[in-house]
Image (cartoon, rainbow over all chains, first blue to last red; front, top):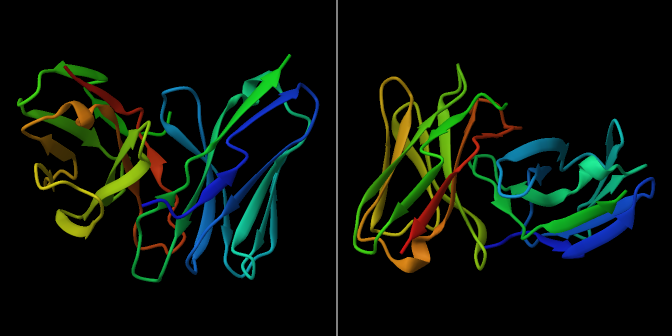
Length: 112
Length: 114
């Protein structure tokens, strides 16, 4: 079953613009991770934010987490055509749980 | 390149058949996870092995089974295949003793059941 729900399902922007994707989840989590998937390929880990963190940065990526609203957002600044991909949030729940539960993803298209 | 390898890349087979997908984790990773990605179900966790032992089960059908060998590679066996089993199957590995486990994904095996 899907834990996370990304919003929007698809997003199309011009190169140079910022892209914001949101993720909502249902149960309490240990951490939340964002992954990128280029068309039909493997997933690439982007960033992890722990449940006691509110914001994290990595290069052009900024992730926020609001555990009271059970939501997270991923911001990609100054987007590039190479950022075109699907982005998934994944949650890990509980101390004894190691598997990730993925959302359905946001398909981002960056137009040159 | 994540360091996780999967073979084969593509597999085309018929309904009712049995196939085996293979995964080699990153060097040093003891934990292997299998995921299925389909258009209707999205990315779903199937099963996890840690150092040869089954650790967690997700939405894995009884027709599917997996194992992890002493050299830590893993195989996912799919039997009595149905059209709906057509999907991308991913293997991921991680160092499980960390709570914040980053999972490294392989390139996947695309299974087509005709």
